[in-house]
Image (tube, rainbow, N blue to C red; front, side, top):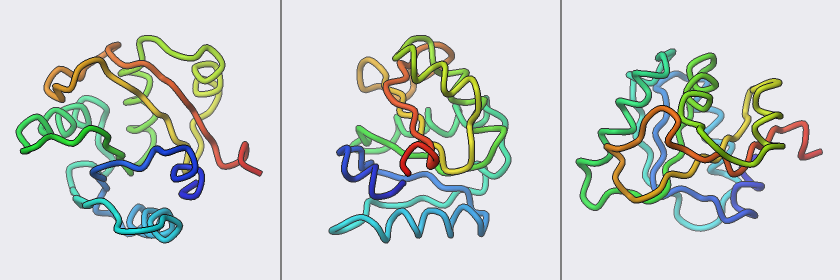
Length: 139
């Protein structure tokens, strides 16, 4: 998945990662597959098993960073991440939306874009799902 993220030019400027050992190990595999200097990583206990509303609150906090990052990746746990992706997605690629609705497996990547650059404005239905990639679809 890490190689696919890099090949598609989707490397984030910042990574928010659960403090759990399992997510750290997963993220290490992704980072090891990227060239150059990795982006900053914030290990955040608040992401661990958080419901989607709490994850939105974590994303909104990015508005206070200077400068705010343009692209962020969150590494966490289901069902919270799956529910977050569903909550934020109001529009998007029909095939990607259908695939995401069927199953959100471990190491899946939902790429959700938002208009503007204000992280504080991120909320339900305001995102567009542009890609949904699963490990099984890479082989």
